[in-house]
Figure 1 (cartoon, rainbow, N blue to C red):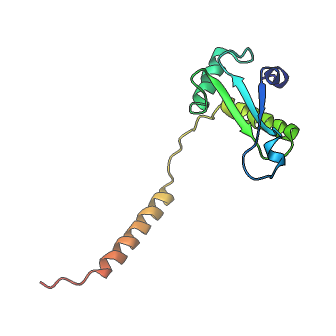
Figure 2 (figure 1 turned 90 degrees about the horizontal axis):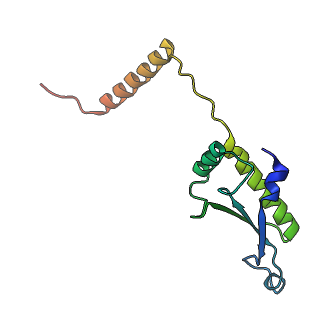
Figure 3 (figure 1 turned 120 degrees about the horizontal axis):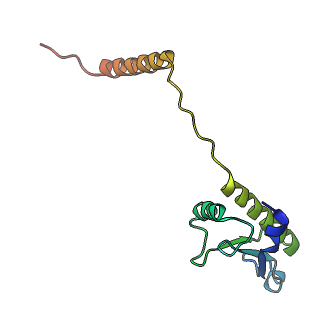
Length: 134
């Protein structure tokens, strides 16, 4: 994955942040919104696009556009850097190949320990009951 080529495909939009801030917040657009069109991207091959589409399943719009926003900082530049960093981390996370789990046998001592704990618990509950008279 080429990060510089990927960053060139990003588009940004700056909007006014929500929340308190007085008069200044009403005239400054410091919130950064990142837009990335996954379907038209030339950085990824078809398999990678499919994997990322599954990873971003509920985050993509109907057109296949990923939208991320950041308004943590008062600085527009800092918000842009934060949202870009978050985007790159999400892409890496989406492309990560999961290791195949190798199943192992449960040791005999673990089985014994589990059954012993079950027996102790069953006896404890049985002792709570009133005795039966025959």
